[in-house]
Image (tube, rainbow, N blue to C red; front, side):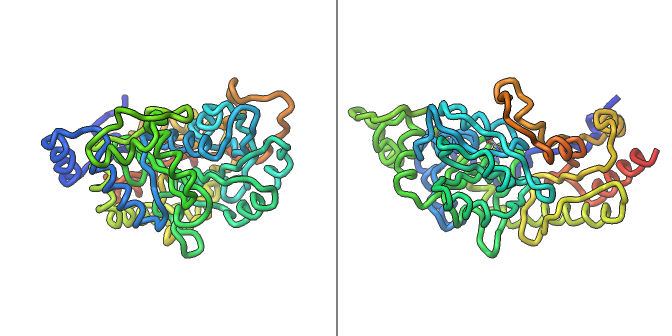
Length: 377
Ligand SMILES: *Cc1c(COP(=O)(O)O)cnc(C)c1O
């Protein structure tokens, strides 16, 4: 029997008194929709990234609107690693375009450029690298690949809020980056997400498309007004962020240095404790630059992951799998889509260990010791 009181959870939201006060403030001011709080959160994020930011209702919506804004639609293809959350695939197929599953590089489990190049067609419009576990892989290579073939790049940076690559913060360089602020990501706004880019056309389009395509409605909402007479030029969505969400986001962003330190030090401790175990391989990530969303290990020779996960859960340790490949799904499985050698091999070995802000160092020791006992039994 799992004892919920003792359970070491895989992930969880952590809410501070400051977060609660921020929400209470919005509730008391009785302006719950999109207004000043959202404008302020966008301003703070723009400072954080060094690039303009548009906030939306979740990370999936951010990816969807980014795709739409660069003109991805029916008949188009977007290159995307199979090893990602289904949200990335759904964001592409929501536009009517086809997500073209690609393999990953063995080391970093990020998009393999050479494999992506083999899957390129005249219909390919964009490439969507996923920053797996906070690491961005060889992102420079992806940008030169994209430049070579005139493709747009939309980074799924849901795992990489705060991560730095070659001295620059993810979101602060590149074409378009999308983040998620769902409850268990590096910072949360309850649900939520954002699009970060310097492309004026994408900024303008996403500001309108999050409000049903109502032209310049964002500007009105930020003045606590709304548009009564307006034009609509394209299909939009009800994807805007609320003041309640933005208040949580602002408060969490203020706590980010503390949040980042805690996540980093837990991941570093796991790395140290797991370093010398022959069957366990840690990710090649440097947590001085990366702020990890999750902590993934690979277990060599693992035959029955479900059984291992069950035994760990029986001992009050929750684990996860990031991710089940998307090319296995009925919706995205395409005949003749070729091989996914690395994804199919590596996926079976993956196990995500608990990582969240309420985890103590002693919990990490307990997780590691229990895992090793179970592997050695
Ligand atoms: C969380 C996540 C998303 C989607 O974000 P939501 O805010 O949950 O919609 C997309 N891609 C990856 C890799 C994620 O982890």
